[in-house]
Length: 315
Image (cartoon, rainbow, N blue to C red):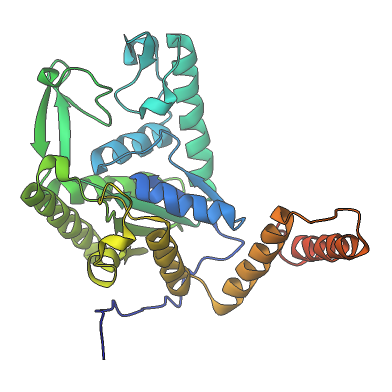
């Protein structure tokens, strides 16, 4: 008896990810989860230098400013609730002084450009088509920072808007790194504060916009994270208590699906070796002075040395 609809696995044969890959991730909180999984397994991964960015325009702005060498000044930031903030970045970058925030923003841009120049894969996860335009500046913001809502106009990006934005992301990155491969995905997190129907419309625009880009742009792919959750994990036991965000079980499920799709069997075997070592490091013995534990530590150290020598993986 079949009790679940399943998304067909389509393993890639080219541009696969391995331990020589350099991965850059931008986007919603879902990209944070996948980025953390890469780092946990000791891949070379760099994610969200401006914090979580939910929509294409915010990601485009970060990439464009980074590639073109933009320099933030104190005119680009503002003070609210005793903190200095920037509409281009997440609140986790907030600082107590304008000088510190400007320094942090420019450092993030420089770091992003360096990572993009050597990246083999760029993963972009879009969360919503709904954006907020700051009325005074007529600019779309990445984060409202709890500025009163009457200062903004809520706008739904069309699929064409999203397509143009992503195309510019590709163009900017390829200008400094023509060989990079792009992986686009849609976050399965539902933005129901926008409304249930409005969230569905938003996701539809994202999917249509992404696929229109993939049809015409080389070195681009789509990973069905949204579809996996909507079809294979169509059950609230795979969600956190808020019934909106996928829980660790769902994240692990999608992570394993991603590895099956984007990594070779050989790389998957290495990941297992890495996880064995990491699990061993966290192991807490009953008697740390016992002969058995000392043997365990020696064996663990040999595994670490082997991973470093064979694959340049430092644990």
